[in-house]
Image (cartoon, rainbow, N blue to C red; front, side):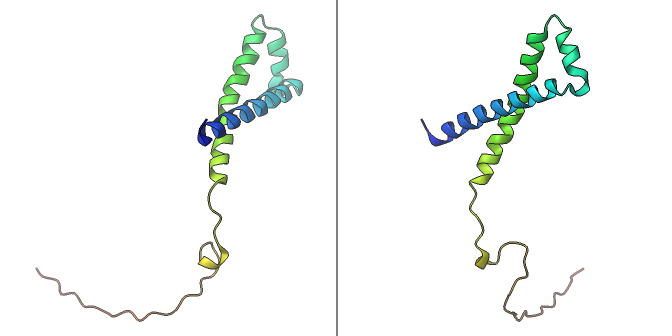
Length: 102
């Protein structure tokens, strides 16, 4: 299996696991009275499944994006990159005069 596919599957599984924990906490803490709404409904299983799947899609996408951006090369502190002060060498710039034509 290619590395990028393995990374995507791993990110998707991690994201859906995190979404499962999130849905459990939201229902357990009764945020916005969702536990009462779900427990009193005749389609409670489907409501929780849809809530978990939709959050799983978002969480796995974020997890995959985070994994991809974490693969970037770290900037070398000596290459002048970053936001610190730059230690450059002054360069003489020749002034040119441009004549405008009508």
